[in-house]
Length: 72
Image 1 (tube, one colour):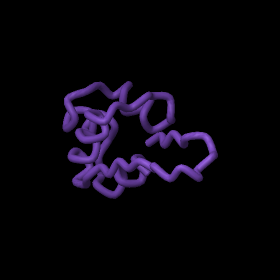
Image 2: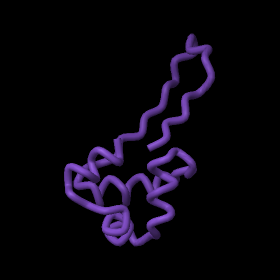
Image 3: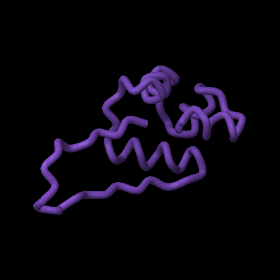
Image 4: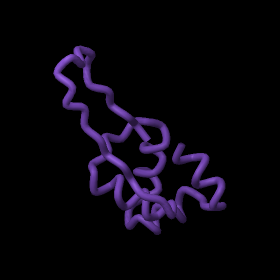
């Protein structure tokens, strides 16, 4: 998702990193799923990609499966 949006905007990893105030290596780890992303990083990433982040919670007591971790 991040790679596709970055490509749509014509950004390199370095340019996206500069927009976010981080390093190219962080962007690389986010794109490869090797970075545990905080909500603050998600917010900055969404803004840098001209979008917005949506975080949701499931409070259904019948929901018995393990929590899902979404990696951007």
